[in-house]
Length: 182
Image (cartoon, rainbow, N blue to C red; front, side, top):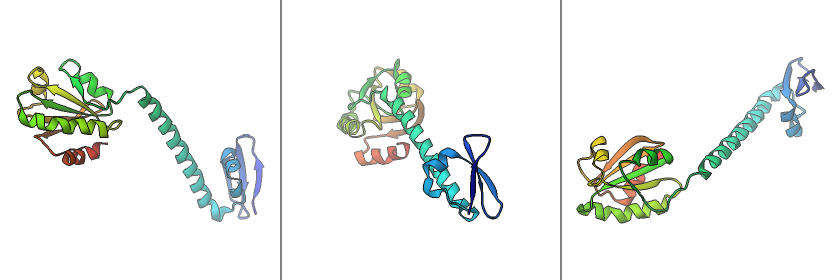
């Protein structure tokens, strides 16, 4: 049997069991879990686990709400966006995960990869944003990232360069490479 009485701090409940152990618990936990009010020191571990799980759920909900609010302001396009040297840094910082396809008009493998990039942009909308950068017109980016072969895809997370994919890679392989970053 336990003795429960409010202490001087109105938000805390003093709990004593028959073994003369004493604990202070926030009333909000006990009131939310009235079925656990009759505890003894033997069930303290279970009671603490319930408190911890409730706290974790509360933290998870707060983080989810914060994430949803931050994503509401972002538009995730369903098709690749056209990038230039001038707006590359701003664009890769704007989205959580971005893949930049570096291509040229004369490059046959680049033209083969283009429909795959379009499909991936549509399928992975909301997770990954795809961009296209013509390296003939935007040489500074090609030099900055050491692109000597095209097609080349640059992977960025929150503006930070993570990985580079070289060549006309099959769709499934691109998804496998991107999976750890999603």
